[in-house]
Image (cartoon, rainbow, N blue to C red; front, side, top):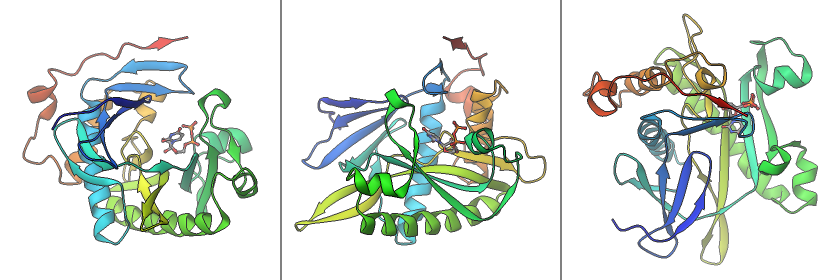
Length: 261
Ligand code: UDP
């Protein structure tokens, strides 16, 4: 499928114009960044795995009635998607306290939350994606109160579904980030799930060992990033037919070259 012009290049993905109006092609890169771009590297094969894992999760969500931007995966690194107007808010859903929540508020790492906690971050790299309140989102017209109610409902349904899906394969869903967009539907704006859901955007811990199977392996220099992402794909039943995909498709695992500014 021919790609059109580049619309946007983000940290881990590139968006190109799609073959028809209202569509786009989302390309998954191997680039990894953390700490608001202070830590950067390339992790060979990461884009391929995130493309497959995100396709699997979004398709599964679609099957339980959550509308998403995914039309279909095109190849190893690309997906055909519906072009939406992205709401400039990252919706963080947490089941267990870790990461920025523990750092900001001094909550002990690993604290199990009594119910899912939803946080909002304003999507703005220059400001470091600051945590904002629902009132900021409404006041600055990033989303309406009605839209936020709907999105909160989606977040909780997605969390319930994904917690069960991961628990079934021995993984705890600790937290994750979602993005939503607006789609024109007969003059009305419909809210649909956008972006990606992958080990780059979730924290996933092995139930038995609490081993991290997500981007924290990159953030914390724990190594074996690709092996961890592959483990997630394999447990979800995505890559069972390609038992040793790292050697087949990406060459032998390489040491990660870390550049810190
Ligand atoms: N997250 C993300 N993109 C972001 C910020 C967070 O995908 O720009 C995900 C992150 O991988 C984790 C969850 O959202 O699964 C909560 O992240 P947290 O706020 O703890 O951020 P961090 O500790 O990474 O700064």
